[in-house]
Length: 206
Image 1: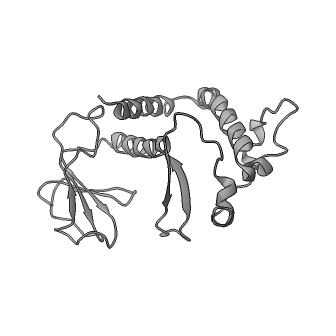
Image 2 (image 1 turned 45 degrees about the vertical axis):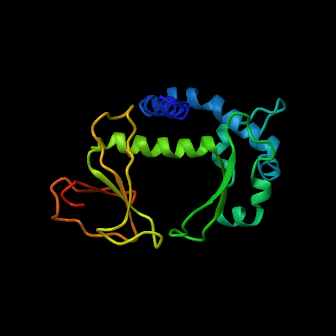
């Protein structure tokens, strides 16, 4: 197992454990991490230094009881103040940072700055979603990627497992990217539609 997959697995195991905790245990588990995250944001990002002012006591400890009172970040905030929102002192060990963006399907597209560790966590969260649904990785995973790929049945195939070995060691089918959705109902008995916009289809369907 390489370093990346080892980190993935530790993240995955942590999520699978924490999702089963009681509310009281979950708060005890997450509150120290929340304190560190808020302190880092206030220390390294001018935007959050201002936004989080007034939410600490005399010892610079954040009042978690007032966490829900912190104003929500808006798309306009990100558009107008991305430079001040982004940390100016990224944590060591989080890897190189890069910029990515949203598709705009739910509103104005936004640009975001993320580290390698954040990208790993996004993958692990998706893996937890798949694991909780008990999806079979021997089925092909179909995702809708827009105009950069072809229509069904062509698409763009990636011959790599879409669910890691530490979740399933079953033989895997590839990932197929399509330009737009396609109705696969009736083409396979093991076709499943997920709320994430992905289509899981059996070999017969694709």
